[in-house]
Image (tube, rainbow, N blue to C red; front, side):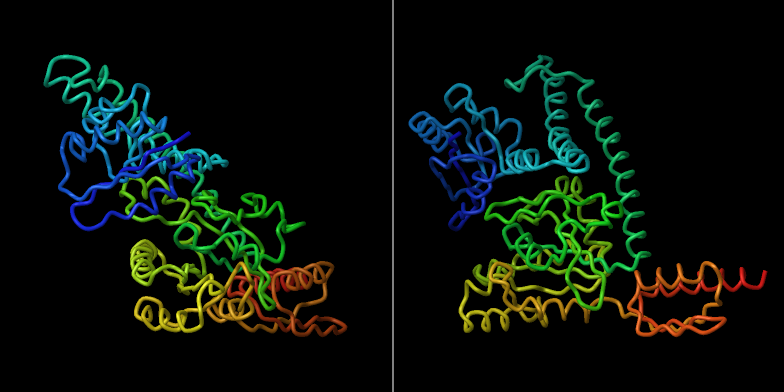
Length: 431
């Protein structure tokens, strides 16, 4: 289906690159673009003259939808629709984003988040219909449609139901994260804007796309994370085991950020970001080939999102270095030093400096503890030794007649569990 793009700004030159990308991501063919620099018109956003001009373009191109890169109120949507050929849909950027999310939602969690966002989008419009229709004492005030006082409460009830189900899913995922840490895994999450190359980078870093016998431990696994030049190819989270020599690491790719999202939309998808907030390390992936001002703006917004709840260290990854010269990379790194101190530059596509990234991840993750356990020889001792081998980095095992000494390094939680297992063996041996 063809789409006409429209954008109004208060002053300056409107940039429509992102909204055009979003329209294409939703499956639309961009048939025309209209921009305007003026104060907002309360009736039509862009004024009657521009609205009529857009309507003529819709008729000429056969477009089925008009997408505004502005938030439209109920009146504006209705009034703009009156200027368009019959059956033309008029939507704003947030409704467009919801369309994309709806197309990409494959898991129950993602579907619930889309539904929640749609309801939060609809709620103020339902409230407006009810309030204005009551005031005018006629259903369908200003053509907004028949109102039903119960609709507003129905939406609120549905929001509460979905929030409860998402909370239950979040608790399940928190338990899963705890089990992974107890199993010796470090958790690394990738964050960043759409099209920064996170999915491509994940494919380059992943050691095992299926995790084999560990499958039952990771029920959120999906097929290989898509690596395509389009927005929102990753709506939910995708987790893979990462190839790091001295550690067991799980790498999670999350939904990409996008500029100018309203609070209600961010809130609807906040549980998706739990994988970032509760990681041991966050890789903030940036497309270094973009203009410096755009990178700076995205870094500021990303920091606002991440530092709100995140406590893990954040490493900025300047991705796509294959698309810039060494001089440009050096200049951008220096210009961004206040926002991205000590970044690491890579190319996921061309697999450049991935060894350096793995080494940096190893350095930034929590330090492992060294432990030497003396285990009494019992019927269960060898199973404990095997468990330590599976969950730690064992340097030496010495077998004696009555005891086994295991020298190893592991995450603090694994060391603690190992000590507990040793205590259970000692209790059994003395019983």
